[in-house]
Amino acid sequence: MSRSVIIGLLVATVALATVGAMAASSSPDGLERVAEDLGFADHGEEAALGAPMPDYEVPGASSMVGTCVAGISGALVVGLVATGLGALLRRKKK
Amino acid sequence: MIPTMGILGAFTFAAQMVNIPIPGGTSGHLVGAVLLTTVLGAPAALLVLAAVLLIQCLLFQDGGLTALGANVVNMGLVGVLVAVGAQKVAQKVLPAKVRTEVGAFVGGWLATVLCAALVAVEIALSGRAPLAPVLFAMVLWHAMIGIIEGAATAVIVKTLRAARPDLVEVQS
Image (cartoon, rainbow over all chains, first blue to last red):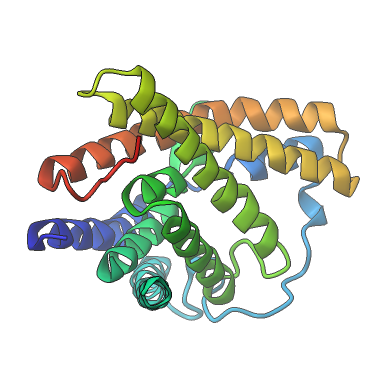
C-alpha cells in the first residue's frame, strides 16, 4: 500500500475507534432487537471467561475515556494479530 | 500484503464499534466481510475477520467464546462467500466503470441479509424461538442494516481504488 493510503486508513481507524465509537447509537442492534421483541433476550449464556474491558468500557474510568481506550487498544491488538496472520499466510505461500 | 491485513483488521474492528441508528429504534454497524474480501481476497479476509471476532470476545466480552465458531461462520464465511459470488457476477454482467462498486454494494447487502437469515435458522434450531417470526424479523431489520453495509463497502472500495487502482484487484 502506498503511504497515503496507509495514513488515510490509520486516521480513519483512530477516528472511528474514538469519536465514532463515542457517537455510536446505543439502540439495540438487529439481533438484540429481535431477541427483545420475541422474548429470548434473557437466554444469553453467562460469560465463560471474564474480559478485561467488558462492553468496551474500562472499569473505573468514565464512559468517554473507557470507550477511547477500548477502541484504540482493540484496534492495536487486532492490527498486530492480523499482521501476524498475514506473515503466516505469506510464509505458507512460499 | 502483511501490513495491509493488519491495517484493514484494525480499521474493521474500529468500524464495527460504530453503531448507526436505523428507523424503528434499532441500530446496525459495518461487519466488513465484503470490504475485506474485495481488497484482500477470500482466505486473508476470513483470517482477518476471525481475528476481529476473537479479540472482541477475549478483550471486550462481545460475542462470546462459545459463540465464536458460529460468528466466524455467520459473519465471516457467509460474508466472504457472498462477496466472491456477487463480485463474480458483477464483473461478468456490468460495465467496467461501475461493476466493482456495484458488486461491493450488492455483496454487502446480501451478506448482511443472508447472515441474518442463517442466524435465525440457528436460533430456531436451538429451540429458543419458532423459525417463522425470527426469520421474518431478522431479515426485515437486516434488509435495512444491509443498505448501510453495502453503501459503506462501495464507498470505501471506490476510495481505495481511486487512490490505488492496483490495490483492489478483482478477479473476474
